[in-house]
Length: 139
Image 1 (cartoon, rainbow, N blue to C red):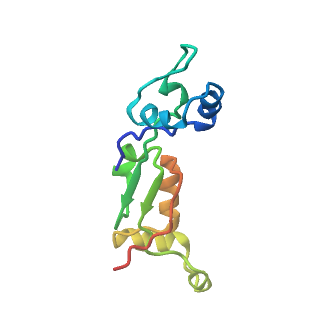
Image 2: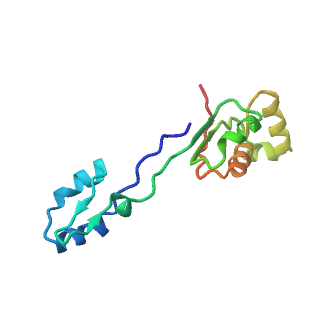
């Protein structure tokens, strides 16, 4: 899921001193920011909104449930801000004490259409995700 572009934030800390220096009310910022109307200073200089705005932003979210192979989602997931990837089973210390390996747990997960935290982590790393919260997706 990708958001539509969101306008960047106003860098008011750059604009306020200029307006104060020219004796202008800060209320002119509303039209400047919301409607893109330039501010003309008393000396004739024009302040353009683009010069005082941060770049626009757009977030990408990837949600994968009951996934034993997320490769199909790779082309759509690069640069994701958040990947929510099911990770139902994990190799625990109790498993290791019984001689169960991470590879065996991963194989079991794949057979049942699920993932481990390691599988989710590898996917998130492949796509350069910024965040990967632990998510079991238990009903």
